[in-house]
Image (cartoon, rainbow, N blue to C red; front, side, top):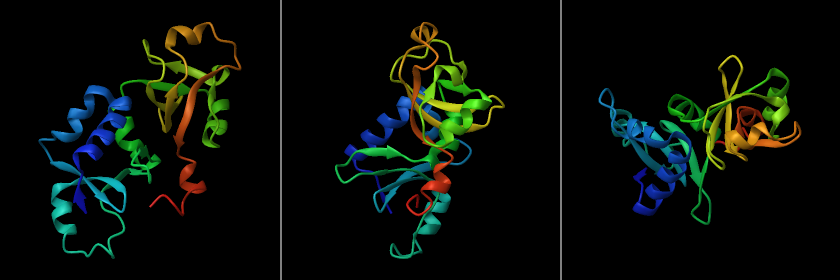
Length: 180
């Protein structure tokens, strides 16, 4: 476990800022329990400093995971968010999308969200902005990137794509071997 380098920090914070915006400050400056970001085997973890200090006693070979895995770096040093970051993203999300019950299953199978499945969307959501996807009963299902702004979605036909799929809770079943 090591701290993030400057380039890694920039990549992680840029990706997180796309989803939670200025609420990124709340992740870093937590007065109740200070947290930090650590890298272990190309995966970025968001971990309490108290737990991080305890994890030092475990050798790197035997350490599998500590804290919340936010995502991983690819071989080309690009950062990809994992579904395990959904709890943090949902807590601080700036823009949200709610999906109708008939659109939940297609999204959980990895498909994009069409306008016909859109229940609600946060006002003034820009194009290509990170959003957290919720069911109509406010259960976070995953996250994605908007294909169109809120204004453009009103003019779109029902088969048009509103949100590009990035990750969903169905990945816990589909990708259980590679998540950690």
